[in-house]
Every structure is written in C-alpha cells, then in structure tokens.
Length: 461
View 1 (cartoon, rainbow, N blue to C red):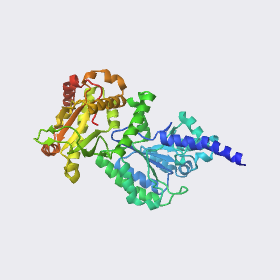
View 2 (cartoon, rainbow, N blue to C red):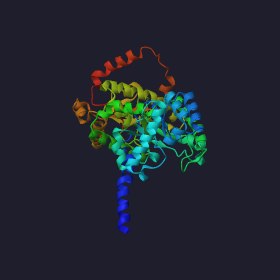
View 3 (tube, rainbow, N blue to C red):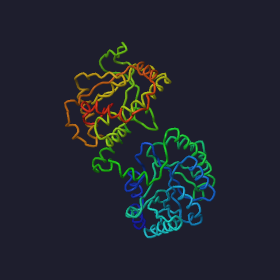
View 4 (cartoon, rainbow, N blue to C red):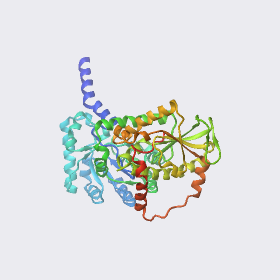
C-alpha cells in the first residue's frame, strides 16, 4: 500500500505539480505579461453571469476599454446573448473549460473534450473559433503543453482574490491600482457561482474596476485584448534575441530586483519606472559645484539609478545610439520634475546637497545641468568600469560586440547637480510649443550622432 501511494505521488507530481510550477513561476509556454508602453490587459474568468456580466460590459463600454473573457462553456451555452454582445462590442472570448474543474483531476482526453465543446459553443454563437485558453485556477497538467499548436495558454501577471466578498471594494481598489501598469495582465471574475466564490463578490469588483479605469485614464493607459498584447510581443525585436541572451537578461533583471530590495532603492514613478534613487552619504573627494557650494565626504546625496529593464527595452527598439540617447533624454525630462516635487515635499530628501550618479557614457546629462567629472584613478574607478561594462553588454541587444566600438571612450564619469539647481530649473521651465516635433527630434539625433555612436546609452548606477 505504501509503495502504491508513493507511485501515485510520483505520477501526480510529474503530471500536475511540476508543470504547474514551471508555467506559473517561469512562464514556460504560456502568456502572462505584455510589453506595451501604454497598454495593459483586463481579463475576466468564470462567466458569463446573467446579472453581473452585462453590467461589466456597460462599464467597459463607458470607458472604451477592451477585455478578454475566459468563459465557462456551460455558462456560455445558457446565455448566448451575452456571448454575442461580448463579440459584437469588440471583446475577445477565450475558453475556460466547459465546467469549472481543475485539469489536475481530468485525463488529457477529457480536457481536450472540455476545450473543444466550449469552442464549438463560442463558434455557434459568434461564427469565430477561439484559440485562447485559460485552465481553471491557472492549473495545467503535463499534456496541456502539447496543446500549444491548438490553443494559446494565457495566465496573468496579477490576481486579486476578488472572488471573496470580504475583500471589499476599497481594498480591491487599492490592489488594482497598485498593480496597474503597462504590460500587466489583470485577472478578475465576473461570476460568483464558482465553487469557493461568494455570489455577490462581483458587485465589489465592479465598483473597484471603475475606480481603476478612472486612474488608468488619468495615467494615459488603455486596456486592450490579449491577442493584441501577444501580437505586440511577437512583433517585438526582443523576441528575435537568442534564448541565451534572453536568459542572461532575465537573470540580470532578477538580480536588479534583489539589489533594489537590499539597498532600499525607491522609484520616482512606480507606474512607469525609469529613474530610481536612494539617499546616501557621499564618499568621494571634495567637489566644487556650479552653485558655489562644495560637496564633501559625508554630505548627503541622492544617488540615481536607471531602470535596467526600461534601458534594455529602449535599446532594443532604438535604431541607433543617438536615437536611444534622445529617448533617454525624453524620459529624464519626464521624471526629473517629479523628483523635484518629491524633494520639495520630503524633509529628509531636502537635506541632500546634490544629485549623484556614475555613468559610462556622458553625452546628454549636461542638458539638464549635470556636471560631468572624471572619477579619480583607483580601485573604485576600475571596478566601476568593469561592472558597468558587464551591465552594458547584458542590457544592450548586441551584447559584448557593442563594447568594441570606440571602447576608448568607455570611461566612467561622475555626474553631479546641486539639489537647489534642480528645484530652480523646474520652477523656471515653460512648456515648449508642440510644433515640428518630428523635425526637432531628427535634428537632435543628427547633432548627437557623431559623439553618441557608442555602445548603448548613459548608464547611471
């Protein structure tokens, strides 16, 4: 008996647990997050519900949001008019099995029948087949991976427990807004009749969702269908990189998350992170700054770090180093005023004497008033160059090959700006006339081309 139980454990682990873990943690052969700059995905499971789904469709229509509905076949069969309305209003319809039952408890042939039966129901109502599949609870078995040519398995990047009424609209709102961002795939539920769900939970979901949609509008974010998100990923230059390159980048970005936690790095704009910072004490030689003050050892500085994920994506989508530099300048123009406001409202940050960063490439920061200075020769300069060279080879799509182009210019520089100067500049800024934007950007690219035809872009660390 003990041997039989042991074999059952081994088989179930190989059949269900390990595939589930691989797909959820590593995203193996599933889609769970996009790469858009202004787009995110709303997905809804377990419907349609005769009461809540029409209210949800009304809400999405008011805000011009498109969503993806992973429907239970039996519910779709019972409410074909709602499925037709989803389709007519431009939403994507995916499969969530014919009955809401985990794939772990079904044979592969049974799962196939569940998918096919639901697809047939959707086709009968809309005239279109569905190729997008989300297994109940996101739980896959070993044989689900073999269906990749028939259906695309779709999971999520954020789930909120909204099937429980006790969560409440207020807490759900906070959770939704905290996860709202470009590329996110948000999972919600428009039906409360599933095992373990509360019947009236979707009522709270609708309240919270409207608040989140209002916040999305304020940030300039829009919800699109999952098929559009997948196409954007497939068309991205990132997907044309080798598996080895993507693996190295992924590991390095994971390390960056650990680094930010260890050193308590904060983000200027969490919704669209580009610049990170931390308050620390300056450890270098005295520097006389442009405002007449002297930065001395022990003075507080705000140390800047550029988000490496954003830097990698900017590099992938830039046709030249000049264009990459221009794009980075645009992002700096967006984030520095936010940092100035944060300094003005934070007593501790206001005590800092300067903004501080170290860069391999230094064309561009002068536009914002940064001083660009040589690092003193020594262990710090040499180790910094070594570290930033590795970083640049990792995050740049061309890898180490870019380090061979004008490598004599790859010298780490220190960048400084008095905090008082940043505040003064932000107060004096006036909006530029939005005329001939394309011509202005092209002129800036040409002016920087000669000096910025370098491996990558400014790396602040």
